[in-house]
Image (cartoon, rainbow, N blue to C red):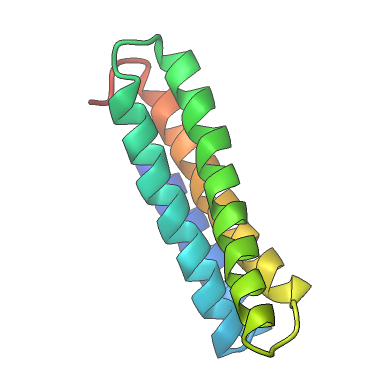
Length: 115
């Protein structure tokens, strides 16, 4: 399972690099980082809950956090004179979705407490 997860992450990172320019890659990485930090935090805070419940919360909270981070960044850009770029928001959410989904599959493959 770990090998499969690594292969998926490498493929996604290589595909995203070929399709997007530098700014979109930074948004993708930012969304991925926010989702990863949020997911690990939620799992740590829910370590006394059943794994299915904790993993489900971690998935949705980390995905939501990456979307909120993307919207916040675009609102700040708009206030600073730039336009609200939905492609940037999509890249941020895409990074969050990739990490949220990957970690969800990793958590559920363990079938025991992660933390």
